Image 1 (cartoon, rainbow, N blue to C red):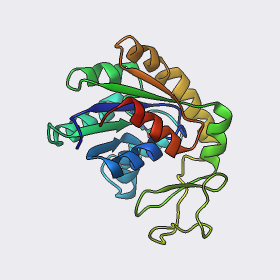
Image 2: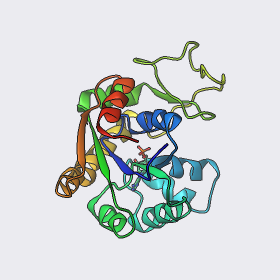
Image 3: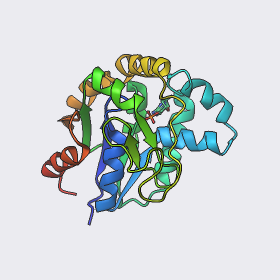
Length: 213
Ligand code: AMP
């Protein structure tokens, strides 16, 4: 049973936010909202905003707040009040965090801490299953058969923004815009800092030690 917890995951691209969230929701009744995944879905479906969104994603820049904030608020408003929620990749700057504050009380801001070197290696090798969203890595967590999902045999895909040039920009965006959120949530006494340079199962064990879901 989950307890109506409101959690956000903070951390650099490749810090494991998506992987850890996907594993946690298997064990608990938690809604996982990833803004990056929502934007990628919009691109795949060729939605109304896809051209605009793509111009930011391919440069590794943040999609403007007026698009992102409204989208997140609508998604959250459609979730039943008593369900726990993990926001993965939102907020990503202080203005988004202040906006979120107006309607969402964060219980835990989990900061997944990792070095830039590991981030670059992780992102360069990352592959995702488009069917079940399982995330693999050709260096650390390769599928049994190269390029094929172990679970449903789908062809794994590489995110178009997981290329060396965009990775550099995404890291810059992270330090310029998102990193100040560590202090923002520290000041609100809800920051939990965890080493994320280790196996995701170990990260999850550490989260479970700190939070009773
Ligand atoms: P992610 O999957 O979290 O790494 O996000 C992929 C991309 O989506 C980012 O590089 C941004 O371009 C965009 N994005 C994701 N979350 C946000 C957000 N909260 N605000 C603005 N842009 C975002």
